[in-house]
Length: 129
Image 1: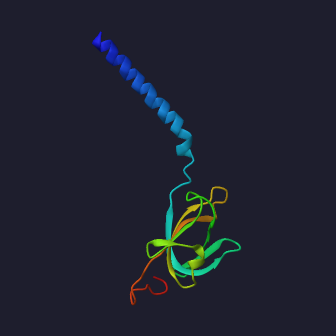
Image 2 (image 1 turned 90 degrees about the vertical axis):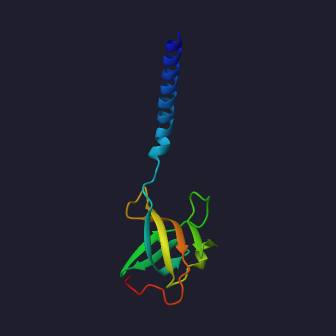
Image 3 (image 1 turned 180 degrees about the horizontal axis):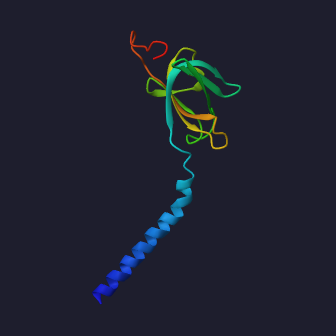
């Protein structure tokens, strides 16, 4: 009798686990891909076109930014580890951009987070580093 109850409980647990994996499948499939990181200096930020351009090792890269929306959809900005705004971006600043490829257009890079680090005087990277 004890063995029969244990088998039934094990079967029920396995069914519950299978159901949980099945239900979570679509949520896992919606992952937009791995977040990448790019470092460089700000070339320009255009509020009108919602575009940030940085230069890293002589190559310019463009990112789409989202100023409005929920924390899950907008581009967040930090300066010296404190919340900041996209308007705080100035030409020549060293930035770290965390981005993902756009689902609809693989050529477009969507900026998820932009860090403006505090770099001590004399420690700033040279052009091309």
